[in-house]
Length: 276
Ligand code: X90
View (cartoon, protein in one colour):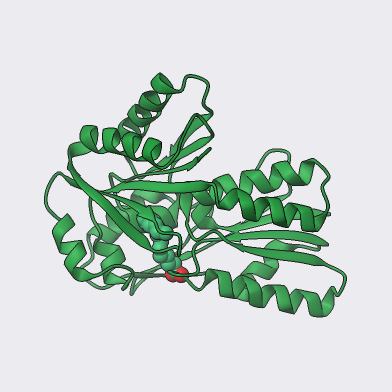
């Protein structure tokens, strides 16, 4: 039995035609811990967070939480958010070691996406596709690792408050973004850290800039996944811009779940795409 598992920063909890599970990230305030699962009410969480003055944070799935997602599978592919910004990759590796003690014949590979959100989702979808083709374990590992070299992440954010508060970007950079209407276009660096590309004013220019940047990065009509945090109109307009240049592209928009909503914040659009 083959299972595909990711942390909840991939924004999905189930997958048609694949045995998939997501290990939930946690979003923590002094009084409350939100579990990033299918029942999390994003609007309620964001409203609550906006009303707080205290420092808030997140934590990654514990090895135990990963193990629960493993079930009793004998072949397991795990995809995590970037190890440069989170302990989730390490925690999944610990879970792998523990599982191998009781299931010595299991085959488990942990992929460090060096990214998150829609780029992580592309990896998960690729793993499901490769597993369906009936390739063997090492072939799937190899093909998925090389696929990761060809996908990218570009995002438009209007606040870096929660990223800075949790030490994931500098306070200086965060201050420069917190101006009304300003969007920062960022990408995931090859090392899996946040890399600012440019600033832009308003969603319309920001979506134009995302399209330009994706073409510059080598996009030529491959798959695109776009999430948004309470900004369906920007995400849809980006999708339309992409389709007007690449009419046959497979482009999907959806609402971000807990972890991405927390860090990318209200108004954000995150896009993962394949390059040629
Ligand atoms: O507590 C934890 O272990 C989770 C920490 C996660 C920190 C980063 C999440 C990023 C979410 C924000 C914009 C995209 C940045 C891309 C850099 C790879 C999304």
